Length: 496
Image (cartoon, rainbow, N blue to C red; front, side, top):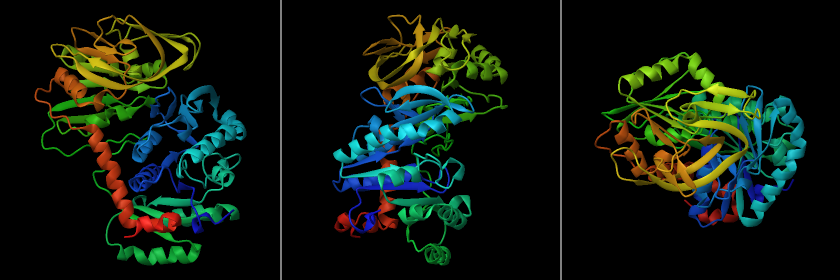
């Protein structure tokens, strides 16, 4: 391998000692740092396992994190930024999406064997991006030290070796054991993989850096590799999560509207609720298995990768009875995508797309019926939203669903460029829509929250909040990382 960091870094891979070490955030920040300097940069993640996804303009599906990283670059997301996306639909299986479109459902063993085949489209996508951009910032998946997954690896060092790219490893000191994580990860790599590692980044540090310096010196002496930066813990950082549900909320003296979201077993695109987490007037609570619903003004049933099985799970928890009582007391209920389908009369899966073939009785609050079909609807869309006793407002977002829903009237509350969407029912107490991202526009968020009982809405600008989060990460990286070592060809751009 050429010593890439000694000459020209055409690509850089960020791997982590653990999941949630900060890979996605670091990649987004590095992309913004380069884009600020006029460098054409794109993100890349060869394989992603996540139920949070985004839709590209040309109707492909990628991981949500790569869409945010593309925004950090100032470019449109592309299916080539995440050529393999795995969406778990059971504990041992997942829907496999290749270059934006569904290939097949595979169990874990089946996909492990398929990896040697899927490396071809992965490299096609990576090569295409390299032809279009000056540099690529690549995100690994999980940890490169998972030795049981080393054979045919396409997500970490297997890809790095194939693409001949340098690697930096990030570790989260807030978890504890950061030196063991870094040293142990490096020790479990092969000699060629170890040579590929150009340095380390320590993430989420709190306290006096002087107390860490002796450990940093030990690590550099033991490994012969530099610590490229120690990033501080960024309190209150609001940025969309790749997969894990983020319960952090903006601090506010008075949360006037109480919103409850049940956490289904295959909950998907829970980033829908990020604008509500960041809303100063909303108290958003995620309710998990075995927990009753607290008192609320609005219950929102989220999207799910397995609608019928999660509908059964919802009933097992007794949440259907609690929703019934909530409506009796005058509360409001909303469903998004799979949650919208659950609010209808029936959900049929004749082709066994999401599990066993069959028909499930819905909750019965909306006069719609859904059939799960083989072809998935993937599109960005826009239009208007009209809630009861309110003027129409602009709305936009994206659709990801295999369900085809019958019973939607021409005067549905959501009017999109490709037709009507959604329904109101139960004397306007229940509302459902297929539209993900519906809370991201101030007007649409205001309209729904007013319908739910919040009179004087003060909805913040979600796009500005996201941009501020990306800029905050980039500012931190510029202050605490030695970027000239990573990109020597642009060293003059990183002078402090």
